[in-house]
Image (cartoon, rainbow over all chains, first blue to last red; front, side, top):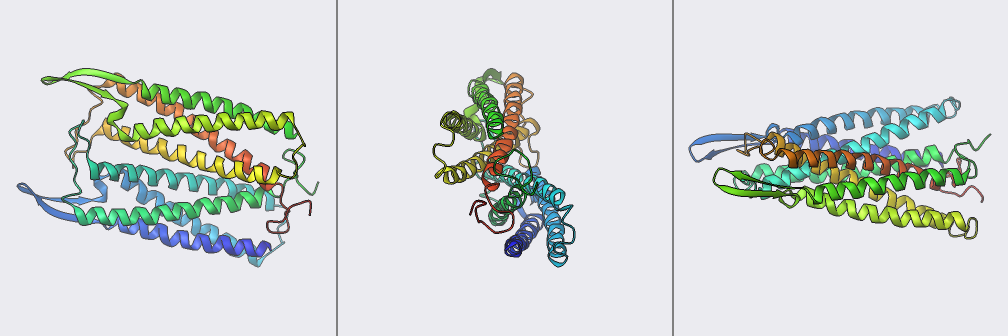
Length: 181
Length: 181
């Protein structure tokens, strides 16, 4: 049964890695050049600083999930050999998974906010909208953000699994006391 | 012991409500009028749509926490009287707390991203910065966002507590089986 939940976790992590990498690639490789009035203008993801942050966060999150995937397979192979340190490992996984989930979620929300501003503009600040000129660029970013949000939801589910793995070790009657003791 | 964790939860929820309400008030009541070149200009939170979303999210989150606070005190008074429905209540609290934590976190990140843009501007898009003109307005928003982030962190901690309350009911050996069965 414990193997089953580990299998679900591994599958979720695998899909999350694929989605995170494709988000980072879609954003990072996106660029478009167009004539604007008199001069040629090129937009890349570096022009929107929220997207730069997003690429870094996605890369780090993918690397982290890859490491966790290795941990999953190692602990599946040597099951029961390091029972003593199991609780500390669960705590570490729990904290890191929560951090990863909240960070990716926040980064995607910030990028979405910036993208919406590029689409709508802000009249009060005399900020022009740009997406009617750089349409292909904007559609690619939209696709990337969709991928990224699915990855975020998967990471939230992974963080639920690691919370489950940690907290079920504790007694339902006494605060922060292990079930075995 | 179960009472102790309920007490911690109630205190955290109380502080979170205060912080959320003060964030919403600080943002909602913020406005500044200045002469810009030839005409008078007033900025309010309605000019930055991320801040409008933030005010609504904070208000809803504060109301939700108030409801939960009532639930805490009711379940403290009638302890053990509705054991059968305890698991479903724990599941509902867990899901709602997670939703609330992620939503407030995302809303604050989006608002922070918009505020950074107002401070820095974006040269490539010919977006001017505005904070050098509306300094007091910007400082008040900054203070509000700090309050809001502290509230978000508190809500994340509350969601940990509700995860703990739910998952410790389950057996550490069998997947999704209750400890008592």
